[in-house]
Image (cartoon, rainbow, N blue to C red; front, side):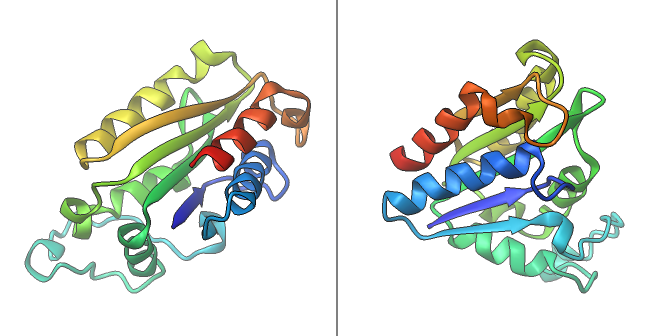
Length: 173
């Protein structure tokens, strides 16, 4: 089971295109794949009330509980974000903050990242470092990063090597 978490706010944006390409590769390889567009979900901000430490559930009633269950059930996680001011976008950060109720149960996955932005790899590197640190701390194995570098306008990624890489990663999972 492959779960793709896309934090792209733009349908047909560069991050979204790479998620779709990886999904196609994984499906062509016979894997069960679900792509969740986080912007299509209702995800509130963590309130740091820590009630989840006692109950194992968040006090907020939104889509995050379902996403956490799907993450736990997946074998492979793909996490995608465009780069905003040298870091992950706010939607992905809000989602990660909401891992708190199940953080001790979110390990044991193979994890891939898709990171896009107008900078070259050096300008996107901080996002890769942040995500790697977070997902390693959760007990996962980081398998790779697809760098959608030098892209800004919708569709620019289609003419880059990242397209082939995304499909190849999907096939190889």
